[in-house]
Every structure is written in C-alpha cells, then in structure tokens.
Amino acid sequence: MSILLTRYQKTSVAVRLGTTIAAVTLTVAAVVYSFPADAQSQPSRSSWDGIYTLEQAARGQAGYSVACLSCHGEQLDGFDAAPGLRGGRFLSSWNGVNLGDMLERTRITMPLESPGTLSRQEVADVLAYILSMNGFPAGEGELPRQTAILRGISFEAMQP
Ligand code: HEC
Image (cartoon, rainbow, N blue to C red):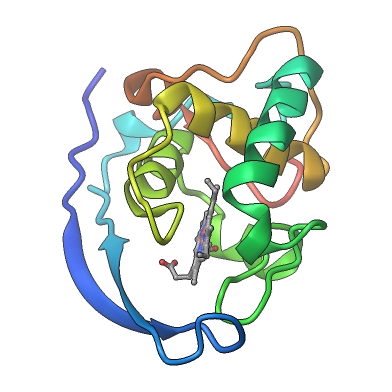
C-alpha cells in the first residue's frame, strides 16, 4: 500500500472577529493539501461505515463545548468568521478528503487562538462528535487517533 504524501503550504489569512475582540486581527495559517492522483491510495472505508462510537462522540461533545463552541456555535452552525461544521457547505468542502488529513488540518489550525493545544485523541473525539452531528452512523469501534490509519477512511458527503 502506498502512502499519501501530503504537502502543507501555509497561507496567511487575516480574519477579523467582530464583536468581543473588536480591533484584534488574527492571522491564521491555513493548510492547503495536494493529493497524488494514485488509484492505489484510495481509502477502503468511508464515513458511512460506523467509524466512531456514541461514547466517543459524547466525549467529543464535551471537548467541543470547551474548545470550539464559542466560535463554531452550539449547533455547529458557525458564527461570524467561523464556518459551520455541519450540513451542506461543510459536507461539500470536505467531500472526498480522508479523515487523516481532516484530523491533521484541524489539529494544526484549531482552536484558532491556540492551535495545537488539543491532543490527537481529543481531536479524534471532537471529529467523532462532528460526524455524529452530520448524521453519519456510529459503530462498534472508536475513530482512531493515528493519522496513518485515518488516511484509509474517506469522508464522503453522500451515502454510497
Ligand atoms: C476563536 C474562534 C475559533 C475557535 C475557538 C475554533 N475555531 Fe475552527 N475556525 C475558526 C475560523 C475563523 C475558521 C475559518 C478559517 C480557517 O479555516 O482557518 C475555522 C475553521 C475551522 C474548520 C475548517 C472548516 C471548513 O469547512 O473549512 C474546522 C474543521 C474547524 N475550524 C474546527 C474547529 C474545532 C474542532 C475547534 C475546537 C477544537 C475549533 N475549530 C475552534 C474559528 C475558531
């Protein structure tokens, strides 16, 4: 099995958060990925295969409440500059991306004001919660925290 090579490019994005932090401008490192067009590296499982457990999603909800809710909203609908993490736009922007890249991007860039402060396990748990809120089925096994394993799982917006 070949391994996906991921190239990270940092782009500076100036994001202004209006209300509370009125005059503060934050520079965000956005991560851009490129994927080799290699058929052999196609993930074998998808987000529809029961890839997390309900217990894990509950842990993720607790973590989300502490680290993410203030910007992305209680119902994951987004707020101000922070995009929603649920529904149409979210599903289409991540469609076809593997869960490994999803975890890495989230871990490296979020929470916006203190990126990299969550452990892989905490980010995997929050992703489980986000999956549950997007209607993906829970299953018997937890979403792993290892990027290499997560690269074998594809985020698919539409049920196959
Ligand atoms: C201080 C506000 C803030 C906090 C806290 C925050 N985010 Fe964000 N988040 C943003 C903003 C603004 C963006 C859009 C800019 C970007 O993508 O870097 C974003 C983008 C994202 C994206 C990309 C969405 C997309 O579809 O492009 C994900 C995923 C995400 N955040 C997850 C999280 C998670 C998980 C947490 C908690 C661990 C979190 N964020 C905490 C402000 C925040």
